[in-house]
Image (cartoon, rainbow over all chains, first blue to last red):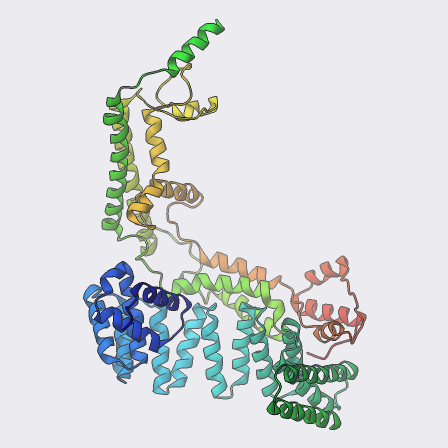
Length: 293
Length: 308
């Protein structure tokens, strides 16, 4: 058996903690070794965050014994810490005792109503219970104060989308664009929501947003498709006079051109039948949609 | 005459310091200062539990974050469609004016009196505790040094300095002729007071209360608003609402189709320069007019791009 290099293990765990990546299998293997083979003393003060990390990974990985060990040691060291209480709550959640977990979170929030981690866990419990309504309420309440939490806005928008509430979801995406105007993915998602929420103004808007994505990220395939779809729709809706036909048809042909270019480049790089097939399909689709008006 | 001065300088430079001064004055002052610093850190922990343990409530966070939200809307509002911008603007200005985001909407029009506001009182107490923990030991040490070691010369700096440093390095020793590199006991105390921060960081960690200087700088900033006086958020909110109302909106995406097409060479590049008169005019009008007039203005030079 190769010797266990605990220092590399420590470093790996630390890197995972920093990046926030969830890799339960690796963390449980390394953490289990560190904890069961008595390397914890070598960690110094870092040991507590390692315990926390291993605990969460163990829950993910359904390693209850390991989770129990971690939690016991943390509770012994920090009997009153809300952070440890949250971990207890997570354990309850993992055991499907959602109501008890909820009670615990409510209790923490009673003493400290700005504990972000607890607020988020509470929302997660609502989601797990299938009470999306309450989850949305809690999310909006939270975002009213912490407006600059991008991930939470995304979460809220996806909840709204589950209920086909496109306008509300669009609002969330607008907030995200305000937070990170240069992030093309937010523009893309916003455009897609607008396109899905089908009416003529929204499609005009969606077209603009798709164009913005292309401006921020060159030849973004999804945005090219978006431009293609929007322009086709607008060209078919020829009734309204304010639409500028020339620009739209130019955009339409531009999207076709870029798409076929992108796919031909793609199939050049990777030779294979499936790629050629794909290219053919795209080609046919583009031709067909061009014919339709 | 000049010869005499030179000779006295030379004599002072070969001044001989008793090693006992090093052992019984120089090192003790430093040790005492370090120990007092550590003690003060402990006392602060005992008195207030440290500043970091006190957490703001959700409402307090909300109250201050909404200001940042308004600023964000002002800065990046051009990236969202005009209607969305207007919605947000109207909502936020109304909320600011009505004081919806205040911690305590009822107290909107009263100026906050720190003596009656429990939180303000708490803050004041905290400040007082810190100040007392800082001032008492410093006065005691300074008195101690003045009483026992006034007029002592402790060390000689190994590098030459200009005369301007004399008042800094030889406090308490009023001799005009002595070379600047000699350091008096009182100055040694000040050097320690200002210079021990990194040692405290080493001993007590980043977030220690041992170092008096940080509080001193904090104090000098606080003179503008008396100790721990809570800010009047309603005034800040009103100011922000005014700022927001004056913010025009010119949508980034107004001519995006054109930009994109000319980027791929489908259109020739067109330059549109907003003349300064136009810009000012736009600013003066209210936001709705500003957005529509700017888009019209651009529309003259290009064409109206879609409708919104």
